[in-house]
Length: 381
Image (cartoon, one colour):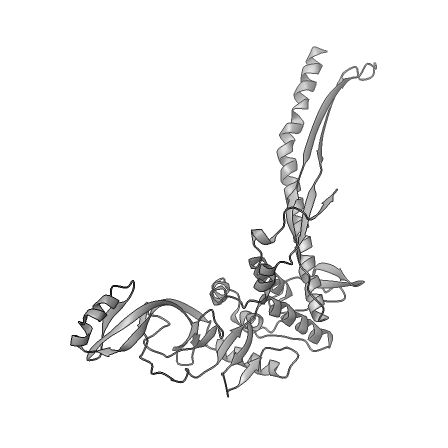
């Protein structure tokens, strides 16, 4: 009897050993719950954008898991078993914090154009250039008196925009180079002027330097600059300046070689000079991106597939299906109807990768301070 009782007591410790497995399994389940909720909300908002309806955002601020471990023993007095009966139980009580993303900073982030540096990070990650240009560029614009090519899938300009993307990517991938841009300050100086006390005093400022300039000298101020470089038919690259102000990508004077150099001195510019000729690129905000995808969906439902050229393939950019496609990934119910997302197919349908990128851009607008952890709706199972 005592041997059986000892075995039973040992068995009581087994639930504790399995607790780590329960935590791991439920962590995976919670992660899957976040995946389903996030994917569903994203597709719902894109369908709202298709309908030109207001967009609404919520997020799961936290998932709490409470585990209850219980154990017990009993002794069977019947002649059948005549032994100790151990028992153990692990119970879970998850709860969820759900909060609306309706604060000012999140709304501003949705309306703020995408950071040009992010454009570079996404390109360096290997995403196709045509995909990024179609998703992130709102329009190409030559400025006052010049042409403007909006990226509107429902407009006749859609074909012109696609032709522009093809021209920019025809001879190779977009390249990027970060370098030091030397901005000239003031006119060229003679040797005597360069030795003047006021000039020497200015040179004591951080970063300011005096450099040879033709027959004289010139004061320069260093500025970090990121250049986007477009390959040409002759193997040379055209450099475009990337800045935070619109247009976020713009033509620049080809002083030196901004696409390969570590340091380039700008030419002196006279007041009232004309801007460098060419198209400026205006980047979208996340809000504009979602409404753009809604417009693509409207065009698709009107029977006009919206395809982009990526290498030799021409896949659909984005499409939600009212019936299961040949390779469905998941479905979302919206206003009494199911809408399906197809599995990724680089040659036929890029919807899944477009959703993944849009979700990443949305997450960049969220901050810990914007996600409520208290005072929210809590659901308990």
